[in-house]
Length: 111
Image (cartoon, rainbow, N blue to C red; front, side, top):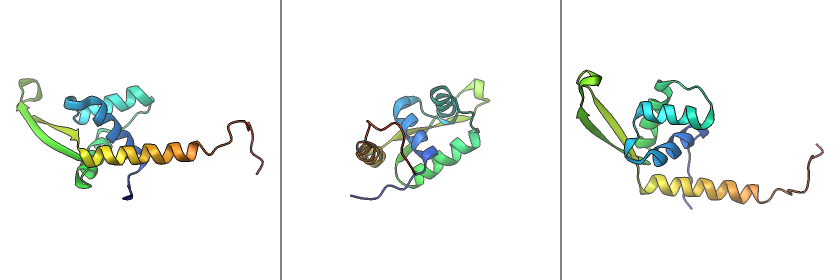
């Protein structure tokens, strides 16, 4: 199995891009993360994570059409690709495998 090296925030961004499907761009990703997690995040952090994930080959991007409300600027939309979905599946499997090893009958663990 290929090792997947992404941090917790990158994982959140990747998950949200997968959730948003065709409507994943910087602001929509930021707003969805804030809504889903209650975390306040910076748009620059989202853009950096999107760029890193695309650089790692987990996301593809395309530029949308110019709109008047954006002063003629175009949105950059992101979509998860096969490698990104494979990475999410591997992370999910690893987390579940570890979680399933916890003795759920224990309330406290002595250290």
